[in-house]
Length: 515
Image (cartoon, rainbow, N blue to C red; front, side, top):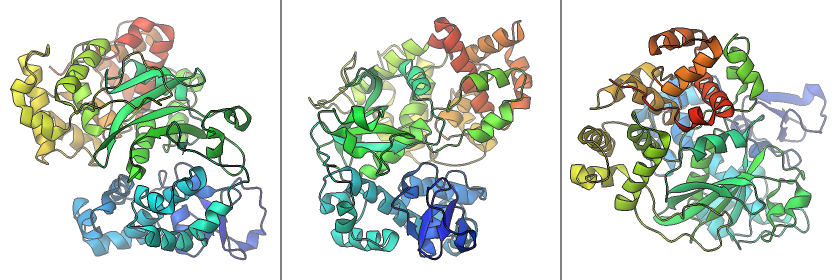
């Protein structure tokens, strides 16, 4: 996200800020962090640091993009630049040079800015103590928080909290309430429609929120503590003021609630929740700019009309990469409903059990009871751990093989390889073929050009557009014109199928063939 820095005030703003400085006093920066490195602080009027996508749309080399992704995942919270550089195949010195040239800041500076911006949101949106905020944002303590706030915002934490609008007194009753910004347009209803057919019973659910809205809720673990995350739409300030836990307090200081979703976290401790919020934003795709894909696909005679009918559609990614990868493997050649049931059985048998807090605001059809097991747990359980759950022997071998590869570090689900490399690496694992590999690349690795052409739902949706049956090979040929955004085209096909026929929406991946 490009920002405008005003040299006479030392402040940087968003393009749509109401402030109108003289043009000759303005310097443009490609992102907020670059402006901060050059001595500018965020505008208190337009809050550029609170908007989505600040580093998502930078045109940077692949290794820099890979490093940015790991930084956003919190990699530098417990690793140094040397380890980050080795992960992307560079020396630390060379990686710093590339970052300074393409981003305008070093990796360490970006990680510190990430923590500072999240801490600023907690200062504004909650009544957590500064010690609690420091731990939640990944700082060592209040002193580090104080140094970061004064460095980035030129105000102490106390001064920043004093700048909250009078009357804004958020509470923790009913969970910690935060906002999730997104790049417009964003269709949260489309995400709910997609996710409701894929929820893992006992782990996640789609249910009715406190105002009757459809919400997404899931269990997760933060610093070893199980908790609940609830996602819903954010209403106007006037309507939110009536919320029992004063959720209106989470609105941005400019008084609006546009471009934001509402995230409510239930945890016994809020230490390091910055990583949970990052996972939430990754799953939703809120920081992804849809305009390049929409511009590339809008003129296509087949996909174009679907794109225009569904502005704001995103390609849903994953909260937990391993969980999503296993869910896709389970879905091989069976319906979505059956895959959800069987994935839930894995969680029930091998996942950590927990009691959902009584103050959860979302009414769900199936109670949340378990966390999905990690790769090491599934690998240790082996074939016997998945016996008598309804899986075929071949499917058990595939799940165990995937778990062992991830647990041993042979498969990095956070890697940012090219699509071709990622698909080839996945296809080396037993029982994984092109359909599974492309879906994992799409949902887990975040590839924009993955395309599981053998997917039955895609073929049926394409048949509706062309008026005759379509084979996997014909669909793959047809999709060549949709590069490099075939993942987005696929999502539009699934979404259109769901709107026109519930039967197609119920089983978009049935008979997705890896044979």
